[in-house]
Length: 43
Length: 233
Image (cartoon, rainbow over all chains, first blue to last red; front, side, top):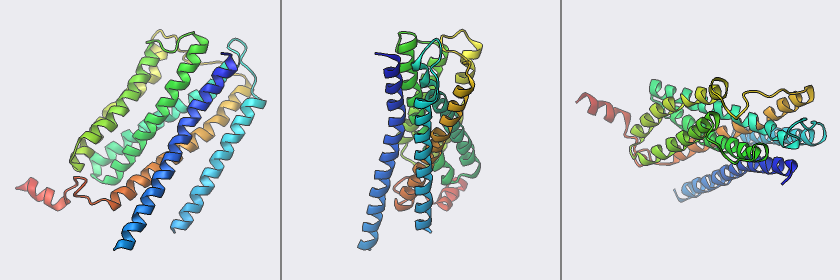
């Protein structure tokens, strides 16, 4: 592997981790909001 | 009001992504390669901001843990958990980017040098923090154990910081940078710090919403008055 490829791999891994976690939080917050709306409509 | 918050959040993430795009563009088009290491040295512009933000997230856990023990408010506990989760995430990023850099520069994925060992310990400490919390059933006990642990775990942060300075280490304690390199580093601090801040806030808000929607007694938080009267009795 070349130095550029190592650098690209590091950036993809490092930033990918943060973006993936952000995406997970977004999906989780939508699921929680959906559950809250459902609970409120049942009441 | 929630709509206003959503608009602010969208604007915040738009600015963060713009800052990230600008940092990537500068890194590719403007930043020169370092003379001895070549293009692989560019990992540094992500590696260092991730490391500093890991320390900030750990500091947040430390402060929030003291806040919880002082005020016994679950607000602090939720903040500490959000900080710890993001600290683990960032520390994972530091270890992965460092390993990739190490493989290219030293020919090794890993070596038990003081800086690397203390960094791995830091990651393990906060993984254990989250694991220990998950294993305690009582909400109040979970928060107290978490707070005491969160204060103790922070002791590793100065060890990580000082290890490469005070002990012989393959990991450099500082790197000489040209003017363009310093500018790139400063530019990379912006999106990484904004992302850290945004992820902690997002995790914290979610913790608060989940706590609000969950029956407190199910989570093990007995009503405070009952707890106090039991204590007096």
